Image 1 (cartoon, helix red, strand yellow):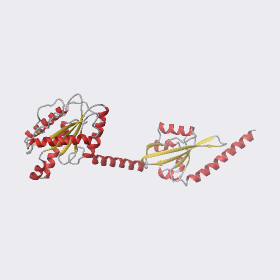
Image 2 (spheres, one colour):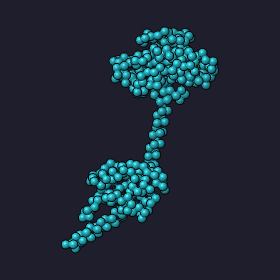
Image 3 (spheres, one colour):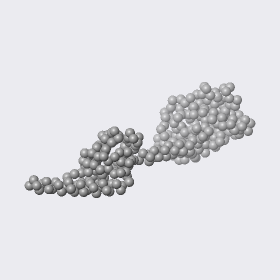
Image 4 (cartoon, one colour):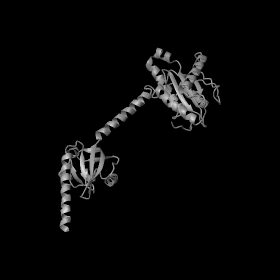
Length: 348
C-alpha cells in the first residue's frame, strides 16, 4: 500500500516537474514580466522580462515571497488580500495597481494581473502573475492631464485680466442659470462697458488701455462674490452673472460697484478715473432658458444707459430691479474699495 502511495506521489511530482519545465519555456517567450507563485505567494518561476525589469536574478528571488521584493516594496496588506482572492477564485479578478520603491530602479507603478491554475494529481494551486511596469504610462497620463487642465483653463480665461472669457462665461453662467431655475431663484446678468476705452487707446496708447481694463477687472472682483461668474467678454465689455439671495439685492451690488469706482477715481495714483455704463437683466423662471438671451437684454439696457449719459458717467436704470436705490454715478478709486459683503455662496 505504501509503495502504491509513494508511486502515485512520485508520478505527481514528475508531472509537476514536467509542467514547470514547460511553463519555464513558455514564460521566457513572454514579453511582459511574469512569475509563477505557489499557494503561499512564493516565487517559483520568473521569466527573463521580469528579471530584467526589476534588476533581479532568478537565483536571488526563487522561493521568496512576492511582497519581499525590493526590500519589501510591495509588502502591503492590500496586495496580500488581492492574492488571497486570486488563489481562492477560479474566475478572473480585477487587476491590482500599486506603487513600490526599488533600491535599484526607484519608484515604480505596477499593474498585477493574476490567474489561478490547479495542477491535477498534485493537489496544488499556483498563480500565474503578470507584473506590468506602467510607470511611464502613468507619468504620461499625468502630464496629459496637466496639459489638458492648463489648456482648458487658458481656453476659458481672458489672458489680460484673468477673468473668464466669453467661452468661460457662456458655459459657467448657463450652468448658473440652470441651477437657479431648479432652485426657483432669479439670476441677474450685469453687463458693464468701460467708458472711453477708445479715447484712452488713441490718446495714451494701448498699454494705458490695457491697464484700465486690468483695473476695471480688479474692481469687479472686489465688488462681486467669488461664486459669481465675472468675465470680460469683449474689448471693453464685462458681464457678471449672479444669483439672488437673502443677504443682498442686485441693487446693493450695483451700489457697491459705484462706491468702488468712486474711491478709485479720488485716488491720485491714477491720472484717468474709470467709469462704466451698466445694464441689468433679470431672469424669468418660466421664460428664460438661455444665458445668451439674458446677456443680450442686459447689453441692450447698457446701451440705453450709455446713450443717456451724453458723456456724463451716471447709473443704469434700475426700474426692473426691486429695492431700486439712488441713481448711480459709476466713477471711482482702489485702496479703500468696498469689498464683498458676506453672502450665501452658491456652488456651481
